[in-house]
Image 1 (cartoon, rainbow, N blue to C red):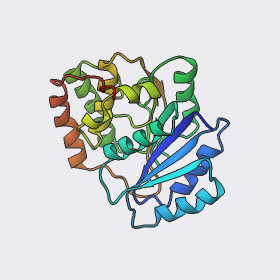
Image 2: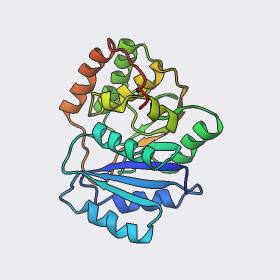
Image 3: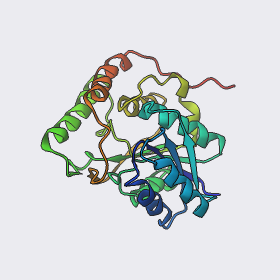
Amino acid sequence: MSDSIVIIPTYNEKENVERIIRAVFSLSKDFHVLIVEDNSPDGTAAIVKQLMKEFPEQLFIEERKGKLGLGTAYIHGFKWALKQQYDFIFEMDADFSHNPEDLIRLYHATKVEGNDVAIGSRYITGVNVVNWPMGRVLMSYYASAYVRMVTGLTIRDTTAGFMCYTRKVLETISLQDVRLTGYGFQIEMKYSACKLNFKVVEVPIIFTDRTLGESKMNKSIFREAIFGVMALRFRKIKPRKAI
């Protein structure tokens, strides 16, 4: 039994899903993978299920009825991972924008260095982004600056989606009260972890934009992140009540 699970949400990722799963399983550390699949019409789920025959004790799938948002996919995955008793729970994209080899560095930052949350950061050592048009780089970079200004966070890459959470963080954050569902979800989770006094560290990575499949980013997702931050600033973040 591995102590680590990598949660990968998918929607129309047939070009990438087998490659990313095999890349994770080829690492020197043993990671398990949970695919949270949002009823992709391109057959992504079928590919995963076929691979589960090859990796029956490492690969899992949770299927949902439709495209319900990135944040809800991760929360679904978090709750599943907590029930299965994993100690280190990772977020990672399916499209190789996050290098699977960096999972080991995020694990080291939590397991060995004792941090509660490790962020794969594009901006902690400058701007480490490959294949993005300059307009998108600037939008992402200044969005993080805006989040820092509004919330008081010191995190450089507030919208990062390459993460490792320790079990105690996800047990403490009230997941049912997380309100933002798009990329704003990433901001809200980091904000909550900091407000609950967890130790958060940024690990420098190089982010490479997808070469296969279509990006899920759109203006409405970006808008939710920007305006959701305003409301977030005035919320009191309380730990989950023990059952």
